[in-house]
Image (cartoon, rainbow, N blue to C red):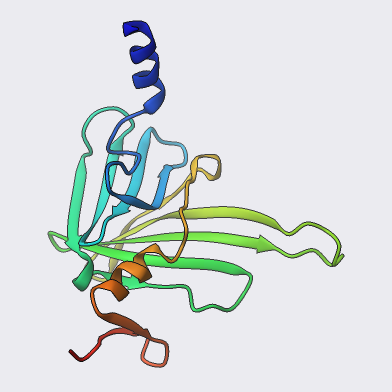
Length: 170
């Protein structure tokens, strides 16, 4: 019994790297050529950016309310489905991008392929200080409308013309 529990714990990986509990996943991945893991998780109220080693606590965790979260949903056009979310901390901006690229073949009977990509761009003011890419084999992107739905539940709608979230009147 104890042996089975230890095997389950070993397979589960670090709790923070995989969104857990009531959290949903925006993006989780291991950074290319690194042992670091990037995760963006959210629930109905807050979104969290976590970055750090696979094992142990994250080196950096930033939590922001969904209501004030800078988040750009997929505009609905093109072969690449992408979304981005930004977190702010100590003069730095962490822009996380998650995307699914649909490879549409010329043959209409062929299967549409998909490739995942993502990562984080870090800026201090206007200067880029890091551009970290997810290892494609490690990427997990959940259903892409989750953050939009969370914003909607809080009374916000995306204005495509203005490219901004707008609060609905009471």
